[in-house]
Amino acid sequence: MDILLQHRSIRKYKSDAVSDEMLNEILEAGTRASTTGNMQLYSVVVTRDAASKARLAPLHFNQGMVTQAPVFLTVCADLNRFNRWCELRQADAGYDNLLWVVNGIIDASLFAQNICIAAESKGLGICYLGTPLYNAPEIIEALNLPKGVIPVTAISLGYPDHEPGLTDRLPLSAIVHHETYRENTDERINDMYREKEALESSAQFVAENGKQNLAQVFTDVRYKKADNLYFSEKLLKTIREQGFNM
Amino acid sequence: MDILLQHRSIRKYKSDAVSDEMLNEILEAGTRASTTGNMQLYSVVVTRDAASKARLAPLHFNQGMVTQAPVFLTVCADLNRFNRWCELRQADAGYDNLLWVVNGIIDASLFAQNICIAAESKGLGICYLGTPLYNAPEIIEALNLPKGVIPVTAISLGYPDHEPGLTDRLPLSAIVHHETYRENTDERINDMYREKEALESSAQFVAENGKQNLAQVFTDVRYKKADNLYFSEKLLKTIREQGFNM
Image 1 (cartoon, rainbow over the protein chains, first blue to last red):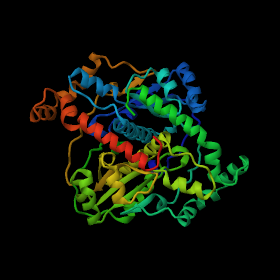
Image 2: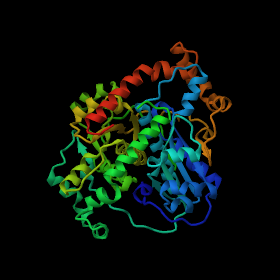
Image 3: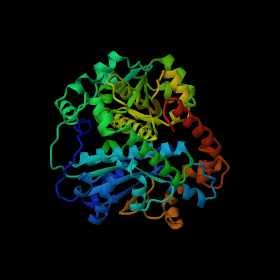
Image 4: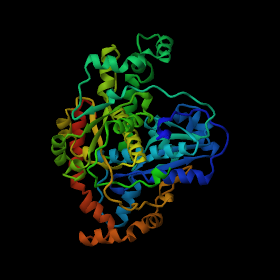
């Protein structure tokens, strides 16, 4: 429980290596997560080699964690393994559609979160990178991912070399609904975001970017509509190229 | 770490209630999970009322956990809250596309897994239900989910009333690739699935269903092509109806 409550994203790592034994224990703990029908629709590519990391770095917009962390994990939704099994057993698989892409994404995400918690329980730090969804085709090429496999998220992992504070969260009442969904009225939205908007870091983001408020920092700077449309189309195309009818 | 390794899905629950305090602590631990840009693109609907559970049960194909567990959680990808905030702040949001559906699904999944681990650390048992993806429009109606919200997974939660054994997993070598993806050759597939196929429970599934092998139990009985196509189309239609361009 404390491990969950103490989570922060670690973006600077010591040069200390993570042993094979420790990494295996962490990945093994990953596989204990629940999956759809116990089908384990995921796989992970471990990058430890410096040249491989250097190749991946630009695909993650050169975020420093990729090359600096001793271990870099690309977590994938994987229907290839299951489909190959079905094929070998004369079983007529029908897992090439949206439903199974989503099942694979969920399986991969639960696996990833178990990995992160296991790593943190061993004193390691982690950081998720959302970039696999942005540069899926380039990552597919770099890691030689076959049909049926889609990179979903990435995790950098190693011994922490900084101690960032906990980041803010919305109040629990913004997240939790009882029996039915409670409407997000203007009044409730103002209440939910008041604390976040009042943070010093938020004021700084707004000022630095010359925006009127924090929401505009998200929509006009961090995750812009034009970029979203571009990367969304690119992702859809990639999922289709990986053999899914969508 | 032990909590991760000892995970099993619990499908029978004692009638003992889960206190509000405990549930809040569990949900709070959920919110410590990482999310895309700390945007927390998820929400959860808590069902504890007997009448609400009875209404939900058929939407989960009448699996016993829905009505029997003291707490039933529907975990959703939620862009509604963030979009409403942007709208109120004159920020031009562009989160109505595939990329952000997937970001929401990942955020919701990491949140869900933290909830499960927090619950297990308190002696509770959990079971994931994949049914929200099958009956999303009916669940949306039952829970009054607004535009931008998609039910992703569900979790039943309570004190365990049975002690199932650990379920099997593929060998770690089937899941983990080093530097690049290693091809799933016929030989490797046969090795990976040998242990699973040799389980007594597998032989029983095969015999009961009059199939030739375990893979055919998946493709012809549990997750049939025709059903997959039907539910995949239904899910796509629902995601569009919830306001996403896909």
